[in-house]
Each structure stands twice: as structure tokens, then as C-alpha cells.
Image 1 (spheres, chains in turn orange, blue):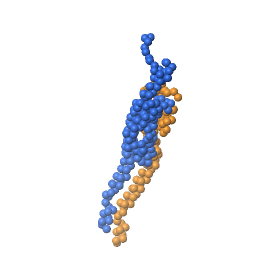
Image 2: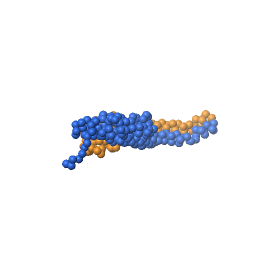
Image 3: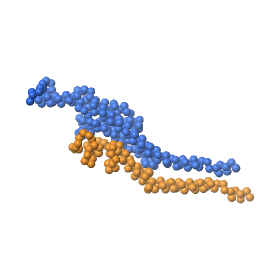
Image 4: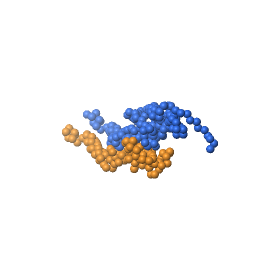
Length: 103
Length: 178
């Protein structure tokens, strides 16, 4: 009689259900984290953060919000080439010369 | 037995676990954007330090006996001003070296001044946004005023071209009324 009672008791049901639910939630989370949409927006090296990173570097140096400019790591190269703070779109942002410098 | 049942039946702790799981993700996203904002403000501080160093470099003149020595002392003065700001406390790592484009050694005159290049971590987690560093470049090209010695040499050169003598000879300039 005791055996039948223990088999029909509902002890443990909540735990099992919780484990199942957790498995579903975890698999959903993994699916979301691995989805292309998430990776494009928030994942490691995502498109959103890569663009933000690039714009941050360019706007910090040039105070220009232009995604077309590639941030350079070696500043010296720009002092002999074209510096985007100095000349771009046929205008200069320096206040002394009115024409682009000769190279 | 009854105590054991009670332990399994009560739900306290479930909400705490769920809160921690969801909160950690939300908090990481929030911290990422807070970090980006701090990067911007710390970067502005570095800009300010470089700008002030560039101002010191622009006007420094310690009456040296040659143009090169004057420029060298101006570089030292600019570095002294820049070091006072201790930018490494905000941007992290070691203090980036102040680089100087010297008029005597640099061909492109619009870029006479100071700059620094440094790295800062971009985000807080490699899973959200990536944690890799970004390279930031702060520049201030205010130029450099001619030093007193440079003015002396130029005046001497101008006078020499009039009377054909060297810089050691005396020349009198007068207005002849023409």
C-alpha cells in the first residue's frame, strides 16, 4: 500500500517540469544568440558594433560623421597624403590656408 | 519527510535565478553603452591635453642661440604641459607619448603641432559588441611661431642683402624721403 502511494504522489513533478522548461528556455536563448539577426546587431564583431567602432574612431579624430572614411592606425601616413580634417570635398577645415597644400 | 517536501514545493529562489539570468544580459548591454560614453569623455580629456601641449609648443621661446635649440626646448615645454594632465588615469594603460611635427624637420607645414595615438577597450563583453581595443588619434596642429633667434637671423639676412656685409657688421637704415 505504501509503495502504491509513493508511485502516485506528485513529488518531483515540479522539479522535472522546471528542468524541461529550463531546457526549452536555454535552447531558445542559444537559438537567439546564434541567430544571424542577433549576430548582426549585438554579437561579437557584429555589423552594428563594427560600424559604431569605425565611426567612433573617425569622428574622434576628424569630428566628421562619415562612414566612408577609413580610420587609419598610423597617423604619419596622413601627414604626407590626404588628411581628412584638412581637405575633403574640395574644402578645408583649417582656418589658415584657403587652398589644399601642395604635395 | 515533511521538511523535504516543503523544500521541493516552495518556489523561493526561482525568481532570483530568473532575475540574475535576464539581468546579466541586460546589464551587459547597458554597460557596453556606458563604456562607449566613457570612452568619448575620456577621449575628450586626451584632446584637451594635446591641445594645451600644442598651445605651449606654439608660443614657447626661451631665447635660445639657434632655431633648432629653440624648437627642441619648445618640444620639451609641450611635453611638460602634456604630462601634467596625466591622461593615462582616464584612458588606461601607459601614458601615450606626445609626438611633435617640428617645422625644421617636417615638410607639410599645415601639420606642425602635436599628436598622440592610443588604444582603449571598446566594449565590456566579447559576446556583446566585442571587447577588442580601438585606436584613437588626437591631433592639434596650431603651428609654431618663429622664435626670437629666427627673427634675428631673418633680419640679419635682410640687412646683409642691402649692404652686402655679414651679420657682424652694423647697418643703418634711414628714410631718404623718396
